[in-house]
Image (cartoon, rainbow, N blue to C red; front, side, top):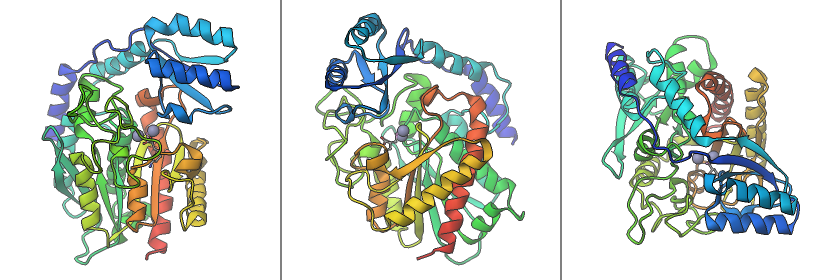
Length: 419
Ligand code: DDK
Ligand code: ZN
Ligand code: ZN
């Protein structure tokens, strides 16, 4: 514990800030009502004046569904005028994105520091946390390095489960695949902390870790995560160089070998959903895929934690076709989001990725599912756009607490339906 405290103090003093990349940028929520509106949205996003924030593929914009766009400062007044001219209704979600970003970093800089799970942590802190928590709980947690990132950082996996001396079924869960989705690594840390806290008690989580192993990667995309702390808070992709372009990075969740680079992904290295030069081109993706392949006989469920949208998704995302156990997955998802809602009333939707979100090929959940892991879920945590990726730290605890209920539900179900 002392190591962590000391480390925290140093980091709190050093702080970190993003360059002013988003000064004056606004986030607008728009609902297109006709083809003219759709055409306008496609045009502006191809010019780069506005960017569909999340979901990411402009060709999937339809009428009826509200869509959030980040509008670059220089174009805000032009675009607002255009929107009014064509009668496209909008709501301003964020007045000035840079201020929201700076507020978050200010709070991180000025808070009195202790390793608490209701704060966002930078990579150095998380890395030393993985060492400490494993060391302090040798009968429950072991730490493995499953590979290195493009920039040479270790990718850690925490095996969380009571040592029984015989092989146990396992649930694999990864966080931090997308750099800017900070609530995701915060959740993986929360989960491990809860496993430690409830160990030896009569809690559902304790029964789970007695009989199964949770294989948890707190941050998959470590380079991107670091970059989101130091350079660009809204970075999504990896940080690998592209040979044919000055644009950096590949979308790790389009880089898995599941109908790779077909629908809902881009061959343009500048796109935030760039699929990469080939499947598993990213070292981080290869490390995760290799680990899962090598342990596929014990892994009974795959969970990947993202934000934001408040959704529980399951295969498929690369096609509108249904998974063979679609009914079972839908039931499971429904019960999981119901458990989640029971705590604070937070509403999640659920369904296959393609029907509930958008077509997206090369995703880890579809890949794991096609490998034979029949319980495969993508969680999109809070919120639904008010803060989006800049979810305030005050929401970490409630978000993690409610998400625990959904994860516990799924884990218990899997334990009772081993295959
Ligand atoms: O990768 C995405 O675009 C989101 C998380 Se930010 C998930 C999309 C659904 C699952 C894709 N396999
Ligand atoms: Zn994501
Ligand atoms: Zn997301």
